[in-house]
Length: 123
Image (cartoon, rainbow, N blue to C red; front, side, top):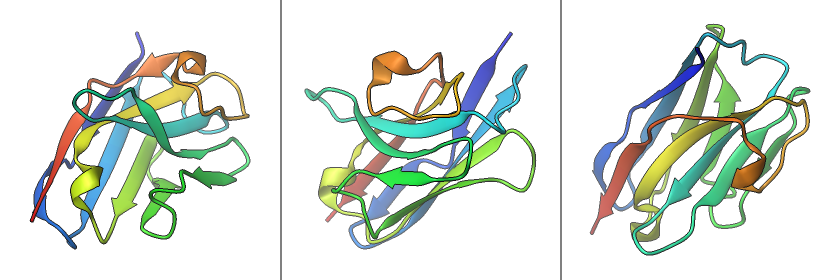
């Protein structure tokens, strides 16, 4: 049984930093596309960042230059380093995996999802 578990969310003031982590069990992450998505209240889920099987990364314009996606040194882990957080970054953040090497910005294209971790940025 595949399971993705996010951690690292919390409350932070604008301008602060958080590091999200995703740990997978029952599934090998390396070689497959992994991504972070987020969903704010009243909004659709949107892609934040992805890393494909070859290590090529993609960032949404809203987070480019502030967020960094990376695969962990430990197998089956994924991270999202978030810096210079803004109020509009407040959302539930989800880790997702797609059973292909190439990534997609569509959440429908992802096979496995974590339960989410809340990030709240306050002024």
